[in-house]
Image (cartoon, rainbow, N blue to C red; front, side, top):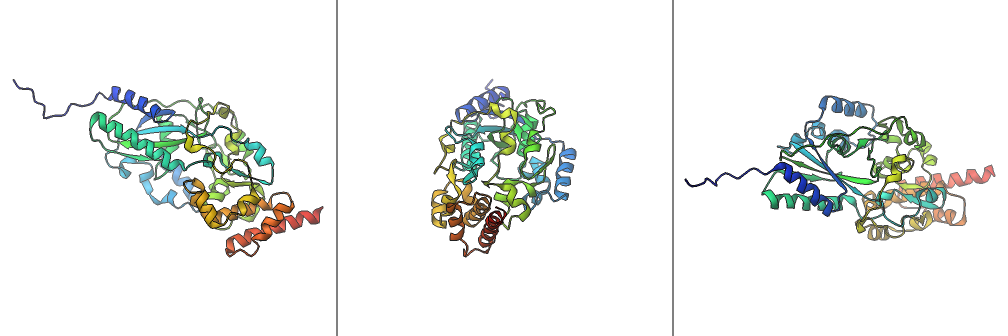
Length: 365
């Protein structure tokens, strides 16, 4: 009797998962885990909606835009039954100590994830390579890869899959690597075996809440983004509220305080990715030097960098706030004077505020 070969044999999914996890390490991911795509939508959606109702998302309208697609993967990618979550370390070697930079008022502090190449591009390319390897192994399958690029609740899926647990600052934490890593996902229709969630190990610690410069972490697992320095320097396109400007200090792109103080980040690992290496000395550079960049220099030097997406005007706005909080040195004052009549009303407003800060300090002394 002739064997019927018209029907394709189903893969050994347990063996496939083992292979996927091996391939992911070769591609530079430090860890990978898998969750079923059935989130506790009642709890998660009610929490998200309550956060939105309070207005904590500020001007990030994309957080409310996609409705239940954010919490129900099959509505975003039909057929999705599993979520593959990955993490990739980003801390470069030989980076200047973050606390030292923040304590030097003439320096510019840039969140350490943003010192190299744009992670969106790096992770999506690697996730695509992982999907290609799966295709080579089993043939065509349904999937879509993400890296902070669509309405995907990254931390929620990573937590559900056991990649880590949600810290009180709302970021993912692991015992092996703290929180200094990027996340990525593949939504797929493959019925892969799933991993188990892990316990939380934050305990009674509240260091991340206590240290937040603007008190944006209003309680465990709840952030008012409108006060968060990362939001203010990256997502907010208009004027930074004046009461918050002195609290920003010299943090001109993002803020790492809640991560730097976290005890679990003593286990953070240095990345092996050359793409995340420090570019243009951004880990230890003065505010005045960056403030002197014109738009062409900014666009050229920041090509391929996550900083490029905020644009030159917003970049100068952020630096003006940093210079307003800096010591009243000749270099700082000269930098501010150089843009006193800037063509941008947004820049002029923040420069004027910065100069007023220095005048107040002069009068007080």
